[in-house]
Image 1 (spheres, rainbow, N blue to C red):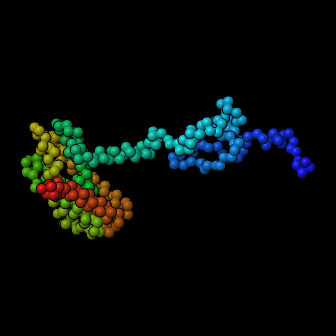
Image 2 (image 1 turned 180 degrees about the vertical axis):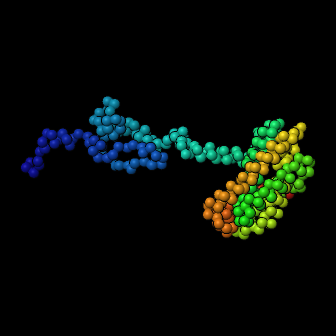
Image 3 (image 1 turned 90 degrees about the vertical axis):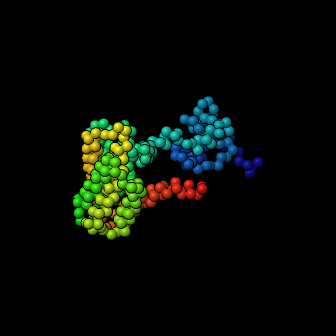
Length: 305
């Protein structure tokens, strides 16, 4: 008996009572971030769970939960996932709306109906349609932007785009009069590949070459624009045609000048600048994509025959 030392009553009571897990490990709680959880700790016999507002309570009167009675809820809390509405807040929601808006703007249906399919009856209708058609028709828009970039390196950044505008208006008027340019859609796609490829090559166009190229392709782009008013049932009046031509000319000229100004501000001092060549690569890529769409139908029909 001499080798055994008896413990005092307070010490015996301290060692006999269940240990409180709050004295040993942090509480199991979800971090609030998807995919992350706090590190697990080894539980020893006698430990109590640390849940509820008063963690580490000695009883189960609403202040603590004995181990084993609510393990499922505790494990689920380790993998808590925020609600769907919380995921789609702030920037993520803005990105979704932006992507949806861009997809809607690139819709081919809207490209041919800037007024939502409503007939053009007044000068204002014609002006609005003329402004909207190049913006909604991304094949025309990309060509005009590429033309503005190429025009900067000709030394005549204000004159050469005007050649396109004049030829485009002539092509629109000819289509209104019933004279259509042949295979206009195919030539429009070709214009993107040609002009984008020229910019991508890093070679600057001379003034004469730029005027010829811009004016030639302008006739075909104008013919496509003219199809909008030529195809309207009942035709359009002179006021509508005038507003349409003004809208087409002003918006495209401003777009070309703005594209040249932006590429200059980005540091493109000559045709070999990487910023300008990347713009040409993008335009050529759009042209190749549209070309594949044109040949897709006949190619599928040929393979199916």
